[in-house]
Image (cartoon, rainbow, N blue to C red; front, side):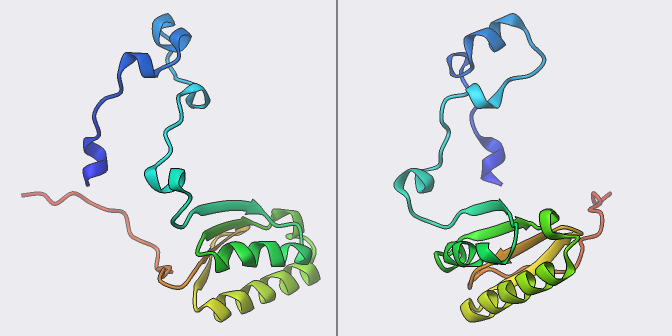
Length: 133
């Protein structure tokens, strides 16, 4: 859990107006770039989010998965079109089978696709409780 032990940010890292005016929030969009080394070097897998409007987007999405990225897809735009939805999900399942990856529904309108090497645990975790002595 080393990521919890990150050093506190310096005052000069925050936008001047937010820090010195005492606002109750900080606009994260104004902070200086905080990309990871992997993202800067252009390597490593990414978690990508996309809305899927239909079957015609499958080639573009499958290329992202073939590159080793994890996709979180929102299929709300086609949720009411049963034929398009079934056709799209069937083709996504074929892509996942081809790469030996994994696919799972997250909620009513979200799917997650993971490439080979990543497994999706489909069991819902129960609420974590602290151990009491």
